[in-house]
Length: 418
Ligand code: NAD
Image 1: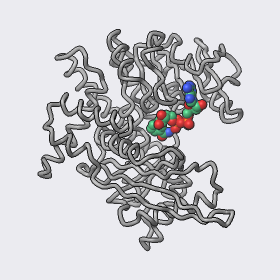
Image 2: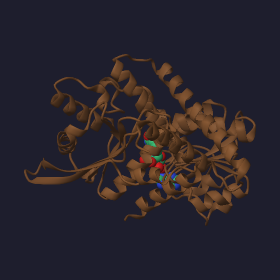
Image 3: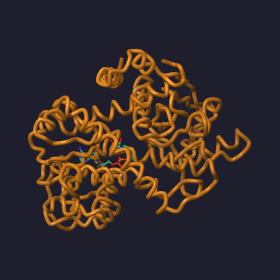
Image 4: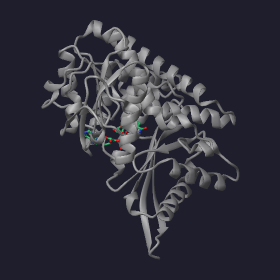
C-alpha cells in the first residue's frame, strides 16, 4: 500500500478513536464505494495512437453526490487517488457541504500534449466515465494539471452525451461558460478569512498584524492580497526564486504584477532579498502561511518558526511532529482542510447557481463564501476549545477531524448504514 494511503488511513483511524465513533465508521470509510478504471485512446498529432490510463474514485456518498478534482499527472496511482478521494470526503464534510468525496486521475504529463491532444483526452475521459458522472451523481473540478479550459471541454462533452446543457456537472468552469469570477481567487480569499478569524481569537485582532507567505502562486498571492485588504501587513513573500522581506510592508498588488510579468518574486523592487524560499517561514511575523507545497515545516526547521499562528494554505505543509512541537510552545496551526477549503466551497456555490440557472454578482458570491468560511472556522474553533479543556495534547486539526467525521457518522446512522 502506498505511504500516502497508509497515512490517510491512520488519520482516519485516529479520528475515529478521538471522537469515540464505532469501528464500523472506520470500516466504511477505509474503502471507497466505487472505483472505475478506464482506458482512453487518443489519436496523437503524429498520427499514432496512445491509450491513457484513467481512474475515478467515488469514495463516500453518505452526505451527497461525490465531489473532487481530476488530476492529470505522470505519477498518479490508483492508491494515491483513493487517498485523495478519502481526504475529499473529510474536507467536504468539514466545509458543511452536501457532498461526499471523489477524485479522478489520468496518468499523463499534460505539458507534453498539444492543445488538440489535451482536448481529446479530456473529452475521452468524460465519454469513458459518462454513466457514473452527473450533476447529482459525481461533480468533478480541476486539480493538478487541469484547469478551467479542461472543465469547459468536459462540460461540453458531457452535455452533448446527455442531449442538453448540464452546467452543474462540472465546477470551476470559465465565467463565460456558467463559471464565476470569484473562483480565480476563492482559495486565497478563504485562507484570508480564516487568517483573520484565527488572529482575532488567538492574537486579539488582525489590524496591523504581520503576515509572511511562503509560495506566491494562486493560493499565496490571493491569500496575501485579501489579507492585506483586511488590514494585515504582509512582510514576506516567497517562491522558488527566493524570499522578499520588508518589515515596513510589501505592496502585494505590485508584487503580483512583478510575479506575472517576470515569473519571480525576487524581482520585486524593494525589501531585503533572501535566497532561501523557506526564509518566509522564519521571519519575524505574527502569522505565517505555508502556501506552497507539502512538508515545509518539519522537526528540522520548526525551531526557526517564530509565529504564533500558522495558516496552512497548501496541503500538508506541516508534519505531525512539527505541529506538536508548535503546540507545545502555544502556537496554533489552522489545518489545511479548513484553511484552503475556499475553492471547494466556491465550487458548491457555482453548482447551486448552475442548478437554478440563476446568477449572483461577484460581491454577492464572495459574501456567501466569506460567511461559510467564517462559520466553518467558528465551529472548529469552538470544538478545539472544548477538546483542549480535557487534553493539552489536542491540536486544531484533531477538532476539525472529529467534526468532519461526526457529520458523516450522523448521516450514515440516519440512513441505517451504521
Ligand atoms: P501554484 O503552482 O499556483 O503556486 C505554487 C507556488 O509555490 C509557486 O509560486 C512556486 O514557485 C512556489 N513554491 C514551490 N515550492 C516552493 C518552496 N519550497 N518554497 C517557496 N515557494 C515554493 O499552486 P497553488 O494552486 O497555489 O497551490 C499551492 C498549494 O495550495 C498546494 O499544496 C495545493 O494543493 C494547495 N491548494 C490549492 C488550491 C487552489 O485552488 N489553487 C486549493 C486547495 C489547496
